[in-house]
Image 1 (cartoon, rainbow, N blue to C red):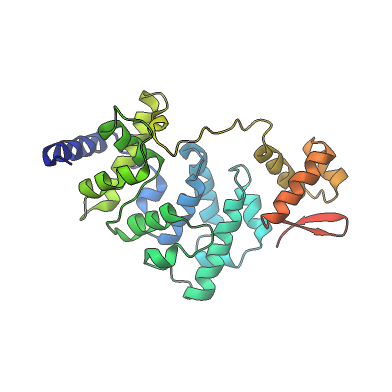
Image 2 (image 1 turned 90 degrees about the vertical axis):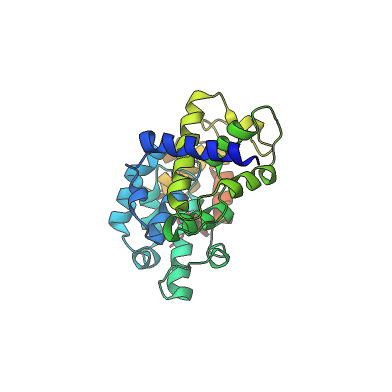
Length: 271
C-alpha cells in the first residue's frame, strides 16, 4: 500500500469517528470480556437497535459469566427470544459453562484459547481480544470489509478477504486498536446507508434469503410454543399456526442443534 494513501485513509476514518462515532453503544463503555462476548454473539446477523435492549436485559439477569453458566437453558432462551438464530443462545450458554469449568470463571486472554469456546469463531475471538484486551490483531467483519472494499477496491469485484487483510494490517493502530476498529465499524455502517449493497464486491457475499416463511421463522415460532408450554406436535402446531409436517421437520432440526429433546411423544427444551 502507498504510505501516503494509507495516512490519508487513517485521517479520514479518525475525522469521521470524531464527529459521528457511535459511542452511545453500551458495549463501547466496557472492557469486560464476558460483556463483550455477549454483545458480539448478539450482534451476529442482528441489527444494533434490536440488540441494545436485549443486551441490557440479558446482563441484568445474568450479570456475570458464573450466573449464566449456572442458569437453566430455558431461562436463557426465554430472554433471548426475539433475537432469532437461537443456536447462538445455546453456544453462549455453553461457552459460559466452559469458562467456569475449565478456566475457573476467568476469561481467556489469548485468541487460541478463546476460539476453542463453543460458538466462538475467528471474528468473535478476535473481537474479544480487541475490545476487551486492546490487542492489535487483524479483525475482519462486514462493516470493516465494507470500508476497505469502498476505499481500496472500488473498481474491483470478487475481492477475497485475503486480499483485504494486508490493508487492515498496514493501517492498524497498534496503540489504540479498540478505538480504531470502533471507528472502522461506524464508518462501514454509515457507508451501507449511502452505497447500494457495498458487499457485492466481495467474493464472500451471500444474498440473505427472506425471513418470512423461512425455516428460521418456523423454528422461532416453535421455540416460542415450547416456551409457552406446548409439548406435542399437535399442540405445538396449534400454538405456532404451522402445519404438523413443518413442525416435525423443524423439531428434528432443533433436536440436532441441541435446543430441544424428545421424550417418547412429547418435546421439551433442553435444560
